[in-house]
Image (tube, rainbow, N blue to C red; front, side, top):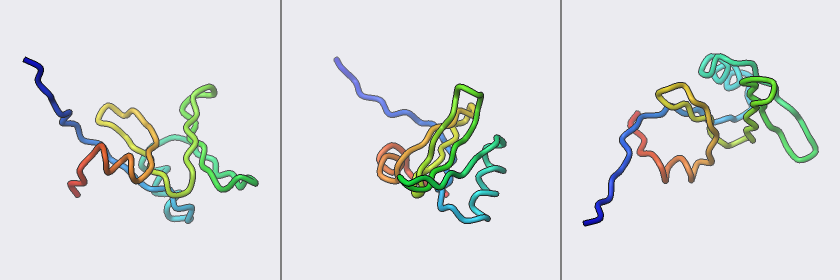
Length: 87
């Protein structure tokens, strides 16, 4: 019989809104250097984990931190589809 399972993991997330307070919250949240770029294609934030491991987040996207500290980015739709908000 084939059974279906759901992952029960907790993540924390913060949305990038490009305000000074928001950028400070993100730096405190991830504990890594960030750079905000104002490019012709729009505003984006670079989160530098290592010189060759950079996460690029656009305004409105979420920075997601798993229990093990792993960082990723998601749109609001991806986040709500994958996780239920608990607080």
